[in-house]
Length: 314
Image (cartoon, rainbow, N blue to C red; front, side, top):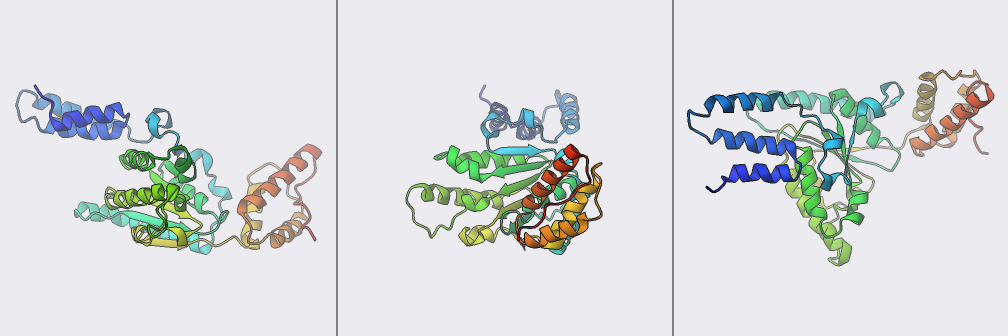
C-alpha cells in the first residue's frame, strides 16, 4: 500500500529532525482517517501532541541548521536592570507589544497579521540587545540567524539552508532575529557575477519566505547598510526603525546600572570620571563603554578600591 502524501511528509520532516513540522504533518495525516476504528486513538494522540512542549531546544536542533541558527535563552543572556533604551527604542517596544496583543484578537477573527520589523543603524547602537529585551518581555527564546557566517560556509546551498532554518524557527514560538541581513539581501540590480549571483538567489528566497510567514510570527531583522538591500525585500517589513548611536547620557547610564547590579562600591568621584569618559566617546559603540567599565571593575576588585572609570583621553 502506497504511503499518503501527508504521512510521507511526516517521515521527511522526522528525517530532517524538524519535530514541530513532523508533529503538524502527523496530526494532518491522522485527520485524514475517517474510520470509526481509530477515532479514539487519534483523539488521544492529538491530545498528547498538544501537550508536548513547543519551546526551542538548542540540543535537539536539526544538525543541518545548527551552524547557522543560534538559540539564546534570554533569561540568561539579558539582564533587564542593566538595559538602557533610547526614547525611540522604548517607543518601538511599546508599539510592537501592542501589535502583538492586536494579533491575538485578529487571529480570533481569522485575520492573519505578521510582525516584521527592520532595525537600521550602525554597529553598537543596541539592535541586538533590543531583540533580547523584546524576547525577554514576551517570554520567548531568541533564535538568531547570522548571515555573516552562513554566506561563507554554505555557498551554493545557502538559499536551501536558510529556508530550512525559517521552516524550523517559524514552526514554534520564538522571536526570529535576522542579524546583518545586508550580507545576503543585496539589490538584484547588482552585477550577476560570482558571489553576488548567489546572494541574489538568497534575496529572492528571503522574499518568498517573508511572504509566507505564519500568522502570529514575530520577526526582527538588523542592518547597518539598508542602502544595499533590495527595495522589494525592504517593503516586506511594514515597520522600519532607525537606531542612532548612544549619546554620552545613555552611555553613562549604562555604566551606572552595570555597577549598581554588582557588589563593587561606587566612588563619589566616579560620577565625573564616568561622565567625562562617556562624553569623549559619545556616538561610539556601547560595547566600548561596557568593556571600559568592566576593566575598571576588575581593577577595583583586584586592588580593593571603589569603582572609577579611566580618565578620558585628552
